[in-house]
Length: 504
Ligand SMILES: Cc1cc2nc3c(=O)[nH]c(=O)nc-3n(C[C@H](O)[C@H](O)[C@H](O)COP(=O)(O)OP(=O)(O)OC[C@H]3O[C@@H](n4cnc5c(N)ncnc54)[C@H](O)[C@@H]3O)c2cc1C
Image 1 (cartoon, helix red, strand yellow):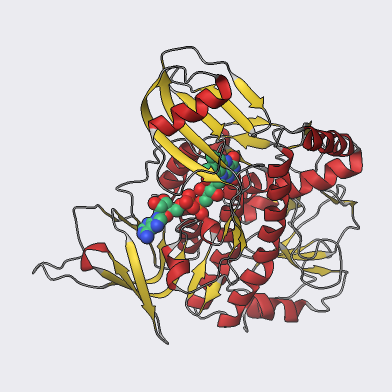
Image 2 (cartoon, helix red, strand yellow):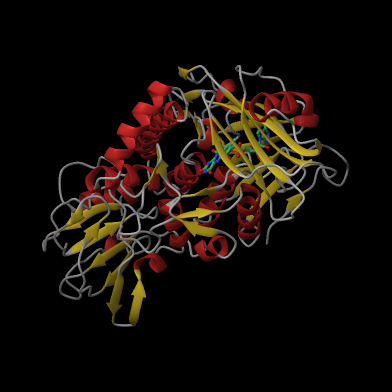
C-alpha cells in the first residue's frame, strides 16, 4: 500500500514538470517520533506523508538504548509491542544515582524497561508503517515552509514542494521547522559533552561503566563481536562541529590512558547536556513533536519515549481536526498536556546529569539520593516518572482515573474475554460500560466511539497511586487516557464526548 519515493525519483509528472503533491499532513523527519505519528494518522485514515532526508530508514549508529514501560504499553495499544519485545531484552534498567528503580510490582503487563538499540527500533517501526497507507519521501530535505489560511507549502531540496493542511516538525533537536516557525527554544546551555562512537580496537578494552570527576564513560562490545560502542565524557565541553577519530582518541587517552588502538569508525557523534524546550508546540498550521520540541541529556533514557508519546497524543487530535470532526482548538490540548510532561522529564534529566559527576561532594549527594530512592514511596514516585506510568493530564477534578492511562484489564464481554488494549488497536475511542448492559446510550457518537458492555471483576490499581474505586463506566481516548469516568449515571458524558470527539 505504501509508496516510497527514493532519492533518485522526484515529484515530476510524465512531462518532467515538477509538480506539487498534496497531503492532509506532512511530517518532516522519519525518526521514531515521525514514524509513530505517521502510523497514528494512517490508522485514523488521514492522507499522511513523511519527508526524511536519509536515503532510507537505516540509522547509522545504535544511538538510544531502549525505552520504558509506558512506551511499551503505547505500542501494545496498537498491537505491535511484541515486535519490539522479540528483539530486545527486558530489565529493571531505570536508575537514579546508584539505585535501580525496580518497578516489577507496578500494575502493568510491562513492569520493566526494554533494552533495544534505536537502529533496531527504527527498523521495526519502518516495517510497521510499510503495512499502513503512509507515503515516505526519502532522500529529501525540507528547507522551509510558508503557511497561509488554508495550508502550508513545504519547500524541499532540489526545488520541489509539497502542500499540506498541517505540517509537523519531527525533525530532531536542530529542527529546521522550529526555527522557520520562529518558535523560541529557551533552556540551559550545555555544560558538558560526551562522544559516542562505534569503532574497532586493536587492544581488548575493559568492559562496563567507569565514573570519575569528569563524568561517566562506558565501553561495550556489540553483538557482532568486532565493534565496540564507546561513550566517553570529554574533559572540556566540545565544539558544535562534527567530532573526529582523533577527538575520540584524545578523550579516551584522558580517561583510560590509552585509546585501545581505535580504528575503522562507523559512527562518531557528540551529545551534550543542553536542555531546552520549545515555548510553543504549535504556530498556526505547524506543530512540533519529539526532539524538535525538547532536548536534554540522555541520562535516564527518556527522549525517545517522550517523542513516541507526543506522537500518540497528537495523532488522533490532528486526525479529528483534519477530518472535520473537531475544531482546531482541540490541538491546543496537545501542548497543554504534553508540555508539562516534557518539562518534568527535562528537570529529572538535569538532576540525573548532575548525579553522574564524580567529585566528592556529588558523591555525598549520590549516597543521600540512593538511600532515599531505596525506600518504597520515593522509589515508586521516581519509577513512575521514568516509566511514564504516572502521567496525569489535567482534565479537571474527579475520579483518580481521569486524565490517567487506562490499565490493560482483562474483560469479559458477550463475545468472550478480551484485553482493553485490544480495543485500542485501531486507535478509536472506547466507552466501556461496566454496569448494566445497555445502560449507556451514545447513539449520536456511534460512528466514532465504540461502546463495549463488559464485566471486570478484579482490583482497580494504578501505578504509584495504588488501589482506586471501581468505576461504572470509562471513556477512553485513542491514546489510552481516560476522558470521563461514570459513577452509575451519565452525568457529564455528553460534554466529554463533545469536547473530545466533536458534536454528533
Ligand atoms: C547517546 C544517546 C543515547 C540515548 N539513549 C536513549 C534511550 O536509551 N532512551 C530514549 O528514550 N532516548 C534516548 N536518546 C534520545 C533519542 O535518541 C532521541 O530522543 C530520539 O531519537 C528522538 O526521536 P525524534 O524522532 O524526535 O528525532 P530524531 O531521532 O532526531 O529524528 C529526526 C529525523 O528527522 C530527519 N530530519 C532532520 N531534519 C530534516 C529535514 N530538514 N528534512 C528531512 N528530514 C529531516 C533526520 O534525518 C531524522 O531521521 C538517546 C540519545 C543519545 C544521543
